[in-house]
Length: 212
Image 1 (spheres, helix red, strand yellow):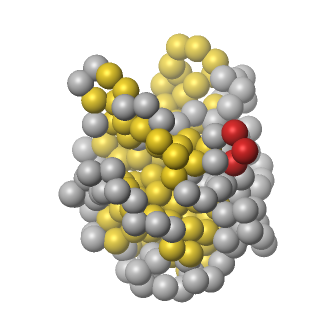
Image 2 (cartoon, rainbow, N blue to C red; image 1 turned 90 degrees about the vertical axis):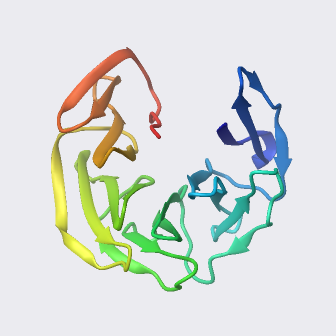
């Protein structure tokens, strides 16, 4: 199955899946969000969904493979003016956000407490997991593309690293066979994929691309 979770009209939250050449149709989740949802999946195909609430708090819930939803749980502290990012690693859900101070913050709801990643951003950040390593990817105030690694114990592994290139919008990131993959909109509106170097894909966009 390929799951799709979107923000609909009226800030509603909808999900569906594509399987065997057909689409399930859209199904409504409770709650509302002013931004796009973030998703992550565990080894049992449970789909974790994280959203910014209408009150700017951060909420998360789990969609089971049988289609049942656990309901929303609020991350006890913290708020964000942007969409959150989510990743699942080492048996836990992790969420990264831009704070109202424009710094980057990361937490695991099961562990509690936010860890400041540092930096200044004006866009949503991306979060990707590779084993016991979490990678935050962000657009800097200079439009540069930056990465920073953390362990799943939320201990930093070095500082921010700048990649070549620039983007006018938020990046997207994932891991493939241990390699960090990043998708961005270029300053020329081209669509670029990072896999150790930038490759331009066909087409153009005025919006942030997504990769998974």
